[in-house]
Image 1 (tube, protein in one colour):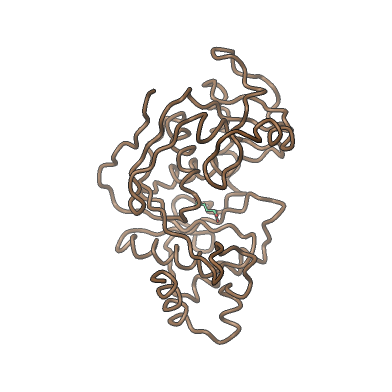
Image 2 (spheres, helix red, strand yellow):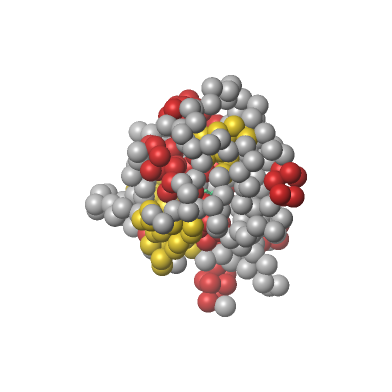
Length: 292
Ligand code: GLU
């Protein structure tokens, strides 16, 4: 079994990012991750990227609210959709040509294949297959062409395109917060969708293209995305790009021990503000939750 380990980056000026998706109001958990991102950026650069590719769920109203709520909390960024910067645009829906270019490079390199399976069919076929935590089931390989097959020339739109994982390779990286992480391709996770049938990049591809293009040196985000990092490391390698460092923050839980989600409206920054809670009190609430 070959092992893919994260190359160590040489120290370059720190560039971190806040990458919220405007699919709802931000809550305390996001606020905490973003405050940690700001702390880690220190005197380096922090940028804000609007990750609005989920067309069914993203709303302009939430995009405006997220910038406003983060500013209210005291977060500041020196590049972003509202302030511009050398890597503009900072809104993913305006960055499509870059994703298409990455798609074509991956396709030409034999890393992608079209997949015609429905979600239901995959779930049935993989019902008993192992997978990491809340992860999607490991794709059973129904549409995977034999190795060495020429790149598919199918039209890009209208089909899901999966990234072909290397056989049984172990992907490992050392997380700045959570320590050493490992996963085995094809066992812990399967061939994943990199380009969606609505002709938009999947999150995994868009985030890699953008973090590389924006010269991000460390990605700070919630621990729920650790399992995505394995996929992203493979995309970095396939695209010939150097990965950043990773720092995954523990997730905040509600009083019943469930993970905070955008549906926890009472803990949204909006709702807290409306109740007269101050930014200092929000920061104190985050710290209390982190200790409990
Ligand atoms: N936009 C993603 C989210 O809000 C986060 C992506 C990332 O930090 O890599 O869940």
